[in-house]
Length: 300
Image 1 (cartoon, rainbow, N blue to C red):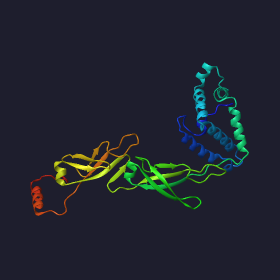
Image 2: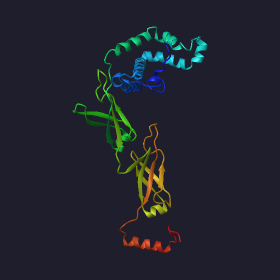
Image 3: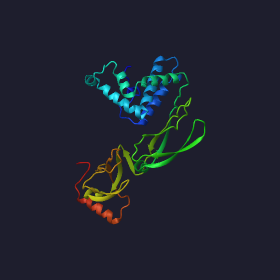
């Protein structure tokens, strides 16, 4: 019996996958290579057979654990062979008998042959939808209701849990809320793309939050300390003397969640604001400043 890499068959990178990863991979590939969708295609039929075989083994915790011993030992087959004196060409067959039992290959083939003579289940297709959430809901996490029309034309409402710190345009998978399967196959999944709505105060750039910081001409010229209301706290920032409009003050680790337990930065973009309506006293002061200052932003 030739060795088969069940993880590769299911297009999984390695054995460090979850039960959900295995299920999702199987459903996607089973739909793609199902005989009903690939009539008279011997290659697709053989691929479908391998996919079912791989899923039968990896979806069961006990057989997966035993197979993993086979899998990782066989990947190191040269060293394993010299230590255990196992023929490389027939190694997988020997491993099967050693770890999975002599009936393993026979049982797998019997199950597949038995199913080949029936209308095998076809998993349902997945559906996609979009949901717009506020920046606060995305930052803190929330639970929202989503109403959508099912394939039979009925309206359905489900609860969607928005994970804390979700990224813009990330997808949330709702299992078995897609199109129904055929021949007893499981329904597809519903994938919801999250759109973080434009915020009136903050701009989300990657994991950074950008906020507008309006200041007066004298605050920009002399420097000052100001309080900024962040998304989850108030922060005291120091504005250095001589700062210009458009410059940004970076407050580290006070931005959006980065998904690794940390945060991006908060960027306060300075905007120097000129008063539109001056009092007589203010006009006199600005006039005097004009007379005594030799500064020109335009040069000579």
